Image 1 (cartoon, rainbow, N blue to C red):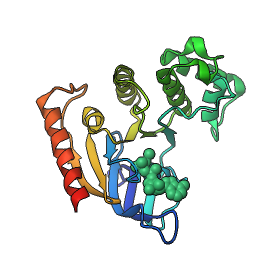
Image 2 (cartoon, rainbow, N blue to C red):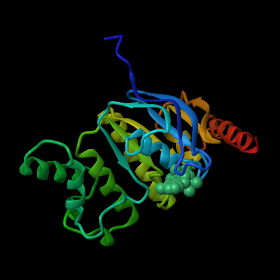
Image 3 (spheres, rainbow, N blue to C red):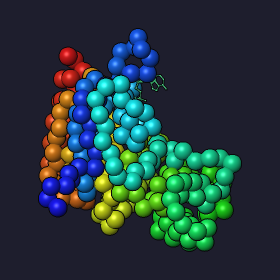
Length: 244
Ligand code: ADP
Ligand code: MG
């Protein structure tokens, strides 16, 4: 129906602070993310990006304003956020929380997902036996087993070396296009945002200060002048906003 809202996530004038007397981490932040698109939120360290994601998934309630998200949502963290005392397949199993299905169905699904991420042989390994990239993939598998409609990614590449993150970025893009999952990635790396996103939201001074659409086909090349142009534009906005 054309009347149905096509937005997966809406922030309307959202404000938030951790302590009553401290400055607000979010101030009147507003933006919407359309279903089926890849959004990126960029901002410096400590700006409040992780807080924004916690609000988006409903782990935290806004002080004022509203957050609307009715999609089945999962989150991916910087380092995979695995439980060290559980095996790979036990960690992935945690992704089923709140999802129906028999034990047998879950096991089959876990194995499928691990195999599609190249981890089939590691299902009984412990996180300490894995590389950073493998740990991050386990985190992705855990998010994907529940067939999410919406995936939140919190600095998914920042704990990885350049080559591993480039490979993972390609895999994410493949998941995005094959499974039509709406994605919202937060990052302090503007290049990563320009490589992946349909729209970049500049998060600065506690609010979404600028929105930059990126009308470029994917996969993109970091050296492409159009990509470089977007990076420059966004950098300009951040520098400008931080000075104010
Ligand atoms: P980012 O992800 O952009 O680095 P965060 O959302 O983690 O930023 O943090 C934003 C601000 O909120 C920081 O100043 C941080 O110190 C503060 N903060 C984060 N988590 C908490 C918490 N649990 N209690 C109090 N302050 C917090
Ligand atoms: Mg963070």
